[in-house]
Image (cartoon, rainbow, N blue to C red):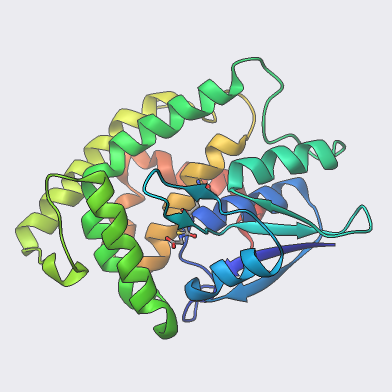
Length: 260
Ligand SMILES: N[C@@H](CCC(=O)N[C@@H](CS)C(=O)NCC(=O)O)C(=O)O
């Protein structure tokens, strides 16, 4: 049985993390049985250390980054831990070859996924400060301090020319928030051609769902969870690009389940 480690979040949604969603969706798409284990942000490093898992990333300054998603799989009779949603997708393709593939079997697939990731990053990067700030109330109380410190570190890495020492340094006027959403909409319009443009639909890398689609789905589900399904923000988003993103999520249908 596969154990999937996800973040504890206040109800109603189990997760607000686009990163862990990528793996939940991967498992759902493949139809593999799994159980979810919910942990706090501050417990991730302990999970790694207790099980002898090397950090997901070690930065040049020596900072060891421990991240979710992580899975544990005991199919071989002993526990195998896999870290990082892309590595998990590759592991699942290899270990469960009879399930639908997440990573197409083409030579330049890593480059294709990276290109898509870069395109998506380009569409959302300017909105990250607003998005991170909006996420805070949706993080479990015990994880808030940890989460805020982690996001400050991320923002200082992404925007080195605008260093901040606390998320409280970020205060946005309604006009700034409006402008951010307008730029996000423009970014998503730019992305919509890849998904078939106005009257047709295709997935990020072609005719089939792949891991690349799950990157986008994770992000959308995170925005939906943070703002709420009935919020004007989410309802507006679902009309962007002639309803492309609503169609996209609708087409993922049953794979969006949070039942496990
Ligand atoms: N590229 C990684 C990203 C994982 C990642 O950044 N996860 C975040 C979850 S939102 C995390 O665990 N952050 C912990 C921290 O920032 O300390 C993946 O796709 O798995």
